[in-house]
Length: 28
Image 1: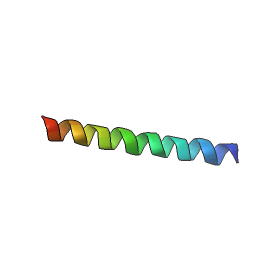
Image 2: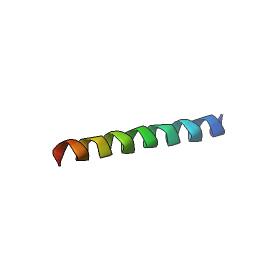
Image 3: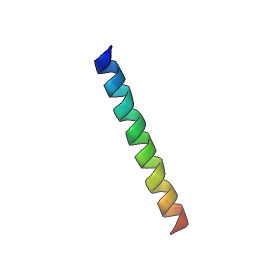
Image 4: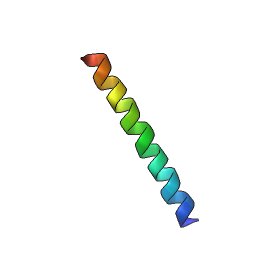
């Protein structure tokens, strides 16, 4: 249960940082 939560959290952070870098590219 806890492990699944941590894995899901890491995936969300990865997606968030990926989209954030995509936004940075769009603004540059």
